[in-house]
Image (tube, rainbow, N blue to C red; front, side):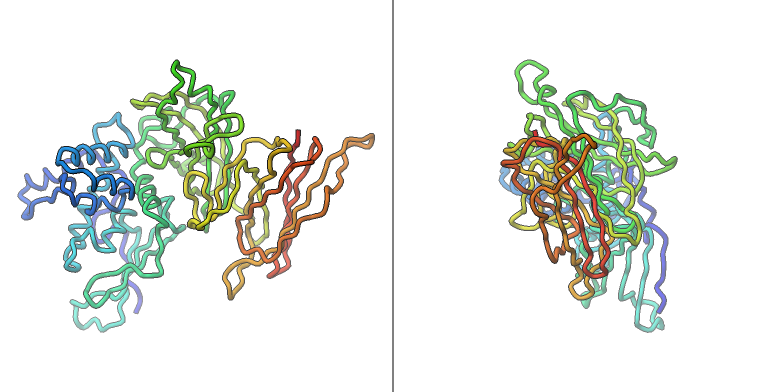
Length: 496
């Protein structure tokens, strides 16, 4: 039978992803209007608070910490701080993050509580509604006779035309629910929306950040961005862009903040710092993306978050549509004081359709395989699939370092049986020599061959001990064994 389509937001009014301040008073308004049932206080400082709806966005470490609290006062203080830490704009009276969460929670309670013996927020549809929001379209399918109008559909399909970055899906994401024998709609076992609780929280946070005021971005947060200085001396930026599904690119932004910035004031203690970024499309009417609050650029403790020259490294990433963007970085201190703001650019072109391509190639200051492979998507900071990758901002190496690099292969075929590519990879290093005839190159040693490579994200490293000072070129050649297509890319570097 043909599926029944419903418009965005069915079965209730559309969710506009940002919530006006009046919604904060929603429980009070319902009570004043004589609602039949009292509004449940999901933020009551009870021991079971961490097992309530907040568990969808509550990190495991916070859950453990909350369980250790013994008094009502300590629990209430914890809850206040939990929401306050996620407020995307503390200059406004409302907390957009909490308002959006409570608004969707109320929707889930009203719509799905009668679905089974569970409260609406505990159902699979309630959970997805809270975390992603209402679908753009809803399809219903049934294989039974429609003679009985009470028959419920066997399958409900929710379609998200442009899901929030962080959700494990691309454009036109479909979330399928199947009717089980208990009368509840269960998320199809084949659907994988989030890789972890952290990804859940970040995906929701990005939706709540739409009213966040990035310094210099204008009061409405629309695509208007006032001019700001270019990247200041001592600061360095790096961007990686990877193809990430149909009409999506994964943009990973890395900012190197000089150590002098942290010790400019007396005492030398690093200030509490939030590093935000706003991406504004160069195309009129194009999309705008924010990395703020829980989704802001992060650093790591210890040497992992420091470069060789002592700079502090911050990194964040999100899925964007292909195109050219202006990037506004802002370093925000305590009390939302903007300590520094400056502009950069980002080019995120789509890979050529129907062609095998390699790169661009990026150098890494740290590259290692993780003991347990992470999810295929990016996990900030510095985790890309099954690797830990800390980029470097220059191509100048010393002989006591390793030449570490990484890149993406696009347009490769998948084996119809294994479902993965079959790639041959060759690395060639050329030494540049300046002579009377100009610059010439000669191979350094023998090419390095890798066979039957199944991954589209490739990385490699080799020691530079014994290499002479000079300029070099690294060439990467890839052959798709399934169709014979070939592609290559190269990058220059220097050993001092």
